[in-house]
Length: 475
Image 1 (cartoon, helix red, strand yellow):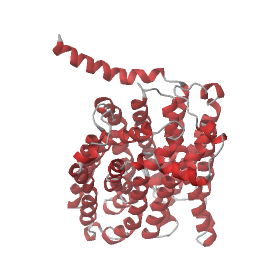
Image 2 (cartoon, one colour; image 1 turned 180 degrees about the horizontal axis):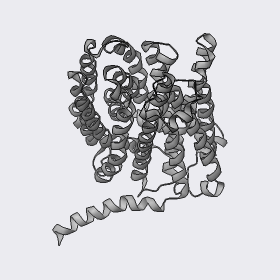
Image 3 (tube, one colour; image 1 turned 45 degrees about the vertical axis):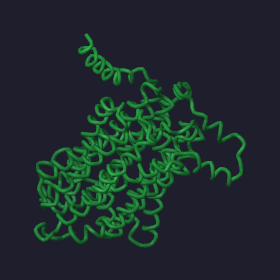
Image 4 (cartoon, one colour; image 1 turned 60 degrees about the vertical axis):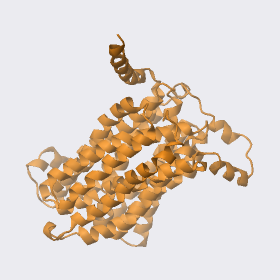
């Protein structure tokens, strides 16, 4: 009896991890809607941002890489202040304000090609990027706060895993849209109407004068508008009130405020950053996180330049299908199977699986090896990504969830902020535009990036005895 009870219990717990989600309130699913569908627009535009800035606006690889890096860094940086502050205005108002800012910013971003390349046009682009970054900085931590408020102790792990997984399913969707829309519009613009771009595509885009990249930007802007409308209509007061773990951040904002010096001390003292082991833990993940930044800083340009047109036209299938698709299926399964495994152990295993396959790209452009890289890298990400977000959020006391999420994202901020300052230059050196693939040295590019990423699992493993002494076994 005892030998059969254990597997039966494991299976029952595995099934209940998913079935328990069905009893969560409607607000939980609306929070996921706002987070996921906005992420569709965010990653749809982010994947093509370096191409848009460097080619459509003529900024070049280096300036485009730095700009995109600063944009993604600002998103994380503003989470520390704006995201934490917005949480105090209530969940619905914060999310509506975030989506509205993202919508306005994306409209002006899309209008950039019509504004010219002078100082006025550049200022509008940078301003639009900043507005979008502010909206995203509010939306992401507030939505994670919403996940905590509309789940309980039994469903929180799967709640965090689900929001991350469905977001990646949305990225698969926008990758499909972009891979069809971008080459279809571009072929029309270049007068190359083929069987793939004939029929309805010709009729629908016959009056559009922009490039394929610009068409995707406008489509993502429309998606943001749809997200805002649906959330405002269905997130009623009654729906908002159905919290399983009420948060008191709004009451804290309205209450008496201590002096600024005291608030600053409280902001940094007593939290996760007062624990040296936790500091090491999250900062040691910085090198492997640079590979994720390369998914939009390097990989799109690498595929568009180093591979033939058949592969380049399906770039989004590689960048936005394989990784998000595996994350969608892998994160809930990995979370359900490993939620009782020490989080530090999962970081060592996951970061190693993510970093090691980078060396497969050292032999030069090869579609089979590229797909293999995406698959193995994505499995590694599925093992550790959602568990880390859960750990940081569950450490937070009531009213400080967004703050803790922002603080825990500082290494991610640094990864995004530093990677773009060299990724454009590296592209220009080892994968330059208008150069035959045979004359490129992309193997050197990926060898360097692989060495950087491998320092994460190696460092985590070397310090495992000291660091694990300060990490809760339940996480």
